Image (cartoon, rainbow, N blue to C red; front, side, top):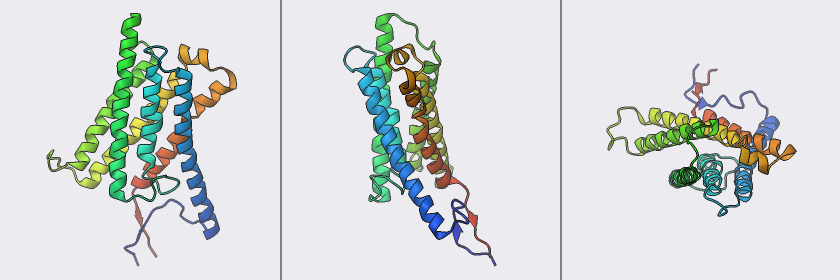
Length: 233
């Protein structure tokens, strides 16, 4: 007879020993995603040598926005390996807003430095795949922020959709933003500046590095918002 108990299909059919192995693998993956985001940000900041030119601040701001703050703003909701796992849900939502605000500020600042650098050098705008992808990422980030405001203030904005549907839209938009940001960061590594700075095996390692936290983030969001089934006996 049907039961009212709901469960997530993730991990279905695992024995107790396999289940604990699965939990620990997820925990290690989450910790590694935090470390990868922070490490990639640090490496890009060091390679950019901020202060040497207007352009040097662009990769610094963008890596802080998307490799660090956006990653932490999403992964703080993870139950495994998050430094904020002891915080209440309400506190996590506030921290999420804080990180998202930092994303917007850092991204806008990075965009400003890039525009100023192009203008000073008298170079054309939006002529590379990286710049086009970056523009799409910034537009999606702004849309994501608007969606987040609608989730928090649905009555004030007179949004007709249900709260659960708004949260689903917000999470889906967040996943799109993160994947766009990942592709944009990877495309930056094909730029003349980056290829002149990093070569050989190190270049390949840095090119593939952003994929790992992207996989962890994608897994977290899809597991949290996949349709749940009802258990039957």
